[in-house]
Amino acid sequence: METQEEILYKADTGIQAVSDQGGANGEDRAKRGKKRALLAGIVLLTALAAVILVLVRTLSKPRAPKGVETYTVQNEQYYVEYSEQYDYWDVITVEYPRIEGIDAAVQEQINPLLYDTAMDRVNYWHLEPSDEVADFQKEYFSIFSSDVSCAVTYHSQYLLSVAYDECYAPGNPIWYVNKTQRALTVDLLTGEAYALTDIFEVDKDFVTMWDRAVSDTLGLAYADEEMLDVLLDCFWQRNEEINREFLCRPFFYLTEDKAFVVGLSLDPVLAGVYTYEPVDRTSYAVLRPEELEAFKKESGFWEKYELSNPAGEALPCADKQENLWLGESGGVWQ
Image (tube, rainbow, N blue to C red; front, side):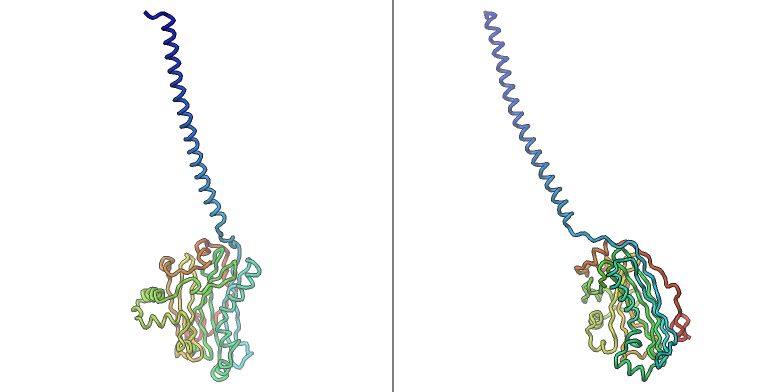
């Protein structure tokens, strides 16, 4: 029979064994805890590094500069009626826009462009004639008349689009009446004017798409392969035979809802000016951005286009005069 001392000794030994076993398990748990804490720290640091990398890339990425929110585009008119300064009469009503409220240097760059585009045919036929045109004036001119209307079709904090419609008659307002269209889209921060070929790849596929859009609108048959080649040459102004009689004028402008109006005008020079009756050689199509996606070229235009929202104010011509020969009720239409 165990003595009291033996029983107490075993009990004490058992307690110590249990205590020793618990101590070993505690050390393992502590080690595992340290490992989990280390892994959690690594994961946290990795996530933090990823966030920092994204922030650095975002902050270092070039951002579009702040646009111009407050400016005005005021339509004005160059008006002359029988000035008697020439050996023939002149009747000129040319509307053009003038922008104010943007950077002064850019403003000085854009305004002459807006004016000169409106005065293009007036300069060619009347104010700044070549020797060849001057000889034509002496022989054929009885009246020079030009009527230009312009519309500010889109204005945002970055971009301004203007469309010009012109009816002009060099020499006689009955037998030489021609209609044409021109357009400008300019960058309000840089003063740059964007040509169609600056922002789109104008190739055979582009012309095919454009011709089908025009033909669908007018209910016409699609152009054949030969005509598509001619149209492509016109867009690039490289057909010498056509260029002898016409100025090939590809153009585009933006509409209020950011669609693209893409057109082509054949504007006659001396060899093609005689018309018998008023002639309009302009074709155009209204195209949505998604229709043009495949033809987009690398250009600073696109970021500004995507970020553009309406801005500025377009004002009508305060005292617009009607051209008495080529206006809506002008003599030629009588």
